[in-house]
Length: 499
Image (tube, rainbow, N blue to C red):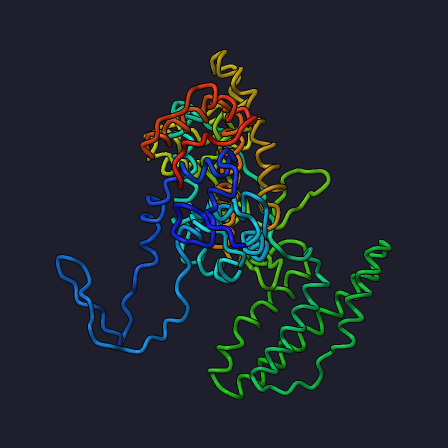
């Protein structure tokens, strides 16, 4: 016998809010997120763009005029709701899921679907995993910063953090690792040889010899010599690899010049990368001030030394993190390419934090930093910078508050271990910037869930009374409410459907 749900649009299905516990912190947060405002602010990047040869619809005072002409549509499947896509990005980084994992888990978790605005449970994937890739690229850096800013606004609106606390921030930097293999000279030279052979084949150039067998053998030999600490033999193997790559490079250049200019343009990038790898493998320092190439597919990767004993060199991009002094809410995350000095990133980091806080009518006025940010007071005249080097020039209260500066270290640890900042899989410099901000947004979502649980009964009482007022239902007597809030009873029977 089929179950018929009363007071629902679908006779054969029950609503998600009848299936889940509405006291779940994710369900509570879903009802307090400003979804319409978020959609309105990011919808501009999805507006229809004018294209050459395609007529745009006529506009009048009431917007686009309806076109009555029947035309065949090649639009494909309908667009996924904007709220669903935004919720997927939040959930992906809040619960440490991949693009494939978040869409699979979404189809199995009713609470996630309720957070995404679904009225009924759907046991299928909301979209393909590649749709998230395109959606991120369309959002851009401004779009993902808007997602982070809304988490700060929700925290202030729910009074989970005081507005005054946003004025005092902690700023620190870390390394966001790129998804690359460890860059050894032997591996890079073998990659350059393979890419040169592939480029020559695509351009229709016949090579005298590809050195395929010898190149693989030299790569393995160099690795064995390095492991055995036989560095002279390792250098001889690398020298032979360098000779092979140089020979292939010169042969391709000769034959490409004889074919035509179009072929040379197609091979320029490959040949320049191979030349950089050959030059940098012959000496330790960079050639002519040019940055070293640490990955063929990710030329934006920097080699960063943070002074760690276990990992003296890290390969990725430097990321600045800003959090509140006491509540540990992340109010800024920004990627800085080129491995700049920490102090030179402070101005941009505080500027981003001020932009994200502007809806809350706050901005950072005091920054607590480490000694890596010394000597930049003149570049930040509106912010009072406090660090250990000023111990004789700061007040006693600031000296005590400075002890909380190291509270940002576990925040960085959680961002890497629980929210995917440990390894960036996104492509290019834009991918690094988007990933850093989205990791911070996912951290703030988990922060909001923890704070909703921590607030406990008083917070849920106010929420219950507000929901009753919105539904026009008289709240039950306090004993029933108290037993429900403490978990010993279900919802009162007089609640309205769909609240």
